[in-house]
Amino acid sequence: MTRMVLSAITLALALVTGCGGAPSDGAVTPDKQAGAGAGAGAGAGADTAQVAAGEKLYAGKCAMCHGAEGKGKGTTPGVIGKEALPVDLAKSKARTGPLKTGADLAKLIKDTMPPDARGSLSDEQSFSLTAFILHKNGVALGGKAVDAANAASLSIH
Image (cartoon, rainbow, N blue to C red; front, side):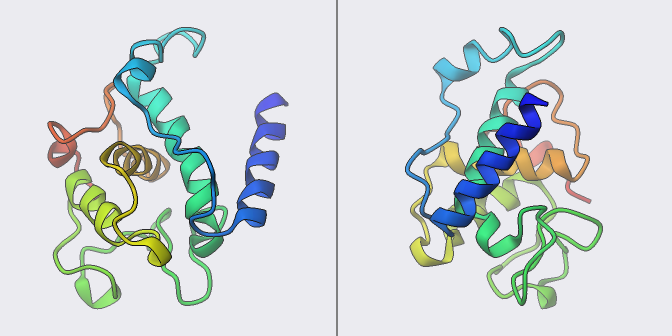
C-alpha cells in the first residue's frame, strides 16, 4: 500500500515537473550502494537501490515524454515492453549505433536525454536509469549495480 502511494506521488510529481524538471538527481553513489541491502528486504543487492533511484529519475525526467509506464507517448518511443529498445536503427531518431547492451543504453541516455538538456545527466544517473529500464524489461542485474565495468555484459535482447 505504501509503495502504491509513493508511486502515485512520484507520478504526480513527474506530471507537474515535466521532462527534465526534477530537483533531485536520484543517482546511486557508492555510499548509497553500500547501504542498499539494509532494510530493502532479504537478498536485496546494490541493483535494488539503483533500480529504485532509476525509477525516481524516470518519473521526474523521462515519464513526461516516454509515458508513466514507459510504453511511449505520441511520437516518443517506448522504453519498456516488447516493442521497446529496438536494435534496428531505422526505428530510432536519437541513436547512431546499435542498441544491444546496457552499455549501449547508458550511452544513449547519457548523450541524448533528456531532449531539452542533452548530456546533462551524470554517469551515475545514466546508469541508474539504465538499471531501471533493464529491470522493467526483465533483464536480470545479478545483485550488482550497473556501471561502466559491467554494463556491456548486460544483453538487452
